[in-house]
View 1 (cartoon, rainbow, N blue to C red):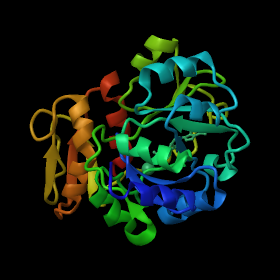
View 2 (view 1 turned 90 degrees about the horizontal axis):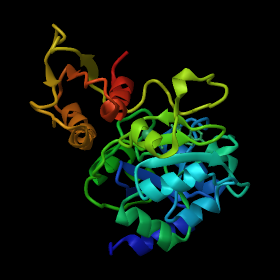
View 3 (view 1 turned 180 degrees about the vertical axis):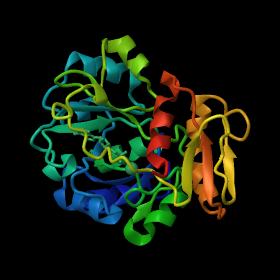
Amino acid sequence: MHPDLDKAAALIRSGRLVAFPTETVYGLGADALNPAAVARIFAAKGRPASSPLIVHVSSVEMARSLAAEWPDTAELLAARHWPGPLTLVLPKRPCIPDAVTAGLPTVGLRMPAHPLALALIEASGRPIAAPSANRFTELSPTSAGHVGKSLGDRVDLILDGGSTPVGIESTVLALTPRPTLLRPGMISREEIEALIGRVELLSSLNPEAHPAPGLHARHYSPRTALVLVRDGQLPEAGRGIYLKPGTNMPETPRDYASALYSTLHRLDEAGYDWIAVEEPPDEAAWAGIRDRLKRAATP
Ligand code: AMP
Ligand code: MG
């Protein structure tokens, strides 16, 4: 299917790093069951060891072989949303190395909706641990070119599958002890509640009960100062650009998310003093985009 697929699968099996497209962003993948391979991910990204990785699977069966519990909620969500941009956090089995989960007793699992990602997992015969394929705190990559620019030869192979359609990272949902949204994304809390009932928000809980390491406040940032604005209230000094849905950015959340990182990557090269982004509406469908913009914004 892809000329580099066999080579990529062999690299994964021998503990090396392969960047590959998913429907959300490009991932920096390694064999999730090989601690030395997983260590290479953290080293290549400059990512702190306290930040757990999502493990990508090609079937529900593979997910069940990695999770110590598979509640009815997982069954319902996987049936409806997998393959897709939804990560389920469940108690892990001992076969998952501690480095993958940053020492947590739980693991984040996801079946990506991208033919090349699924083919890589299948061909290597391994679950693949993969964070976004960029240096820590940089913007996530939505094209093979973005990966090369950020990681260069820190990655053994980049599987080029064009640009990634969803465009922002997956929704992350913990299922035990009770459903809790750890990171919003394009699958909204409302859609999840329609299937499994009440979903708590991380902020409304005692953080001790649901640790979400890796949710660093500053993340996903361009180098150019990004300011969130309302009603076009732009910075007075310097030269910049103003992004607004319905004018120079897409009007629907789906198309906006798909365009967001590639737009920021491009504008980051343009030498502006600032990028002003009109704050999107405070609505469920925009929650994932609002979250990423808040993290990308210059404090
Ligand atoms: P990234 O792969 O960089 O998009 O980030 C993965 C995110 O998934 C992390 O920031 C965590 O918030 C979340 N995550 C992964 N595994 C776990 C886990 N075991 N418990 C809680 N959150 C997790
Ligand atoms: Mg990332």
